[in-house]
Length: 76
Image 1 (tube, rainbow, N blue to C red):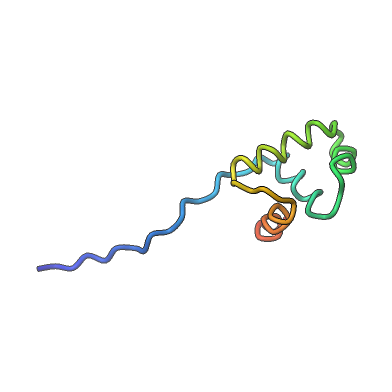
Image 2 (spheres, one colour):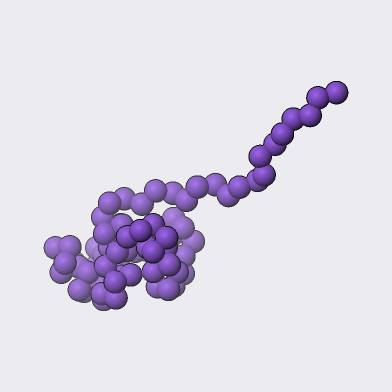
């Protein structure tokens, strides 16, 4: 009889964020409004909103506080 070691169940890795999604996330985590983030990125506030909606959908995040925590954990 042989024993097989099995790794404990781990969560699947989070989907990767696009560079512009990371940039938008960084601005929001730094306390910028959508409009300020948009101006810093050279985009419309609607585009920044779309990036942040995609982040929320990909990662199941609902609040700005959760996005800020994510940015910190990613080192943004």
